[in-house]
Length: 53
Image 1 (spheres, helix red, strand yellow):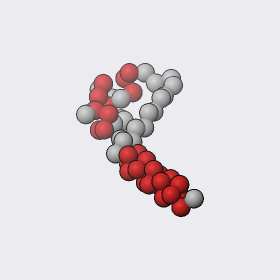
Image 2 (cartoon, rainbow, N blue to C red):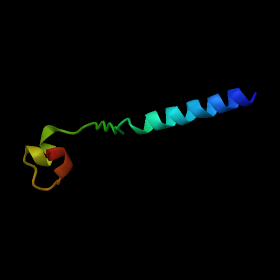
Image 3 (cartoon, rainbow, N blue to C red):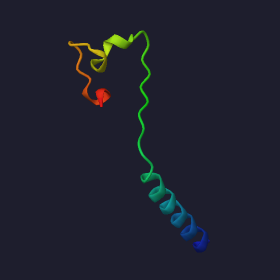
């Protein structure tokens, strides 16, 4: 019983350490947006510095 508990805790800590090394990804999907609404395509009113990189 104690061995299985120790092994399960060890496995959970290993999984937790592995999960932290993966990058966080945010996927944003927009609808009804034309190409000219972004600052990188010449729009002077909308500021999109992170998309422009």
